[in-house]
Amino acid sequence: MKSRFPRWLGRNLSTLLLALILAVIVWVAAVTSSDPNQEQIYLVPVDIIGLASNLEITSEFPDRLSLTLLAPRSILDQITKESGTLQAWMDLSGLESGTHTIQLRHQLDSRFRPVRVVDIDPATTELILEALISKTIPIQTGIQGEPTLGYQASPPEWSHDEVTISGRASQVEQVATVKTTLNITGAEETIERNLNLLAVDEAGNIVSDVILSPSEVSVVQTITLRGGYRNMAVKVVTTGQVADGYRQTSISVSPPNVMVFSADPAVVDQLPGYVETAPLELTASFDDVETILGLNLPEGVSVIGDPNVLVQVGIAAMEGNLKIIRMVETIGVLPEFEARVAPDSVDVILFGPLPVLDALIETDVRVVIDLTGLEVGIHQLAPEVVILPERIQAEAISPENIEVEILEAEGAAPTPTQP
Image 1 (cartoon, rainbow, N blue to C red):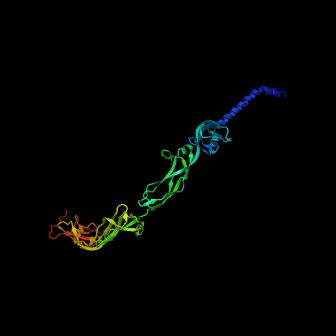
Image 2 (cartoon, rainbow, N blue to C red):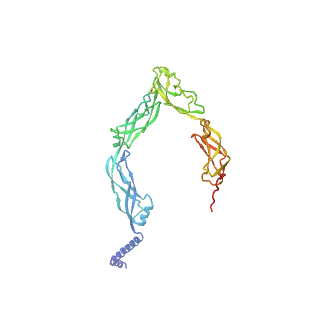
Image 3 (cartoon, rainbow, N blue to C red):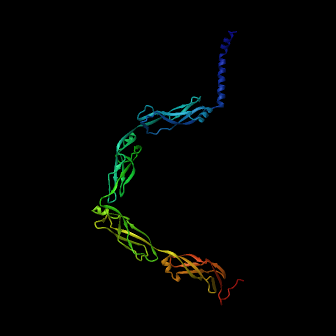
């Protein structure tokens, strides 16, 4: 019996192998039909590793790697659902400044099999690495302009006199100067300010993409008066009273301050802190005043610049109320009609400048009712107050409505009626 089996196996080996191959083909076909292979593209973020701390990438490089994978649909679905299964990176370890061709690498979690990489885009990239350097140079500080006449500027006090410039070598080496400027034009008091620093090249162009430490400096610029000079307020001197019924509403002087000088500083120091103008006469004034006045200065003291000032005084009439009684006038009545009003007079409250109110005459204010187009009968109408002076207005009228009766005049032919 034992000798028969080897002989049988020898005679049927080829048949067994064929059956096995057919079984595998059937199994693969069954699996493939239920979970077919597919291609899918994945965009994988590219990490940078191994970049030396004194280098910087100055060229553009791909931040994502496109991987085309071929695998059963179930595997591709798992890769899509689970984050971190695909990784991509560029290894820059040991590289120095210059231009380099770098291979983009990738890795897929070993749990996912079978998977075949069909395409990688890009497979390589060209990188430019540039050295990061720093250098320290003096800060070029400057003062622009002059303080107001009579003032002087002491040497400024700066918080820093050096600055460290950091960045890519190509940018740092362009920097010829780091500077800042304080403008003191027209200054009359001490200035304390923070100023930004500016990096420029030999041609004066701004150099960007560099880091300045510090990026700004503070400065204290002391401004003081020169000996014999003094900045003083101008006081306007007025005499007299404005006209009755008027009041002074404002007074201004330009300039409000003047700079005075004396060869003897003690004379200036003894001044009361202001200078007076020549007297301005306001007696009986009833309108705004604008005039040029000189200054009253002690002997030996002079004004720096124009010795005269512009003075403006505002004058306005006092305002108030006035009650008057006026007869009601009718207009627009045809000759064959007559009108009767009740009441025949009204009270009118006027508001405006008192001098104008006091000067009103009878004909300046009228109370009128326009009857144009109205028919015979009784009407309730609001009268109109007609005022000639423009600055006067009617605040109230009593009563507000007047009863007007329109009737045929005595002796007039009767008004024909419609058939």
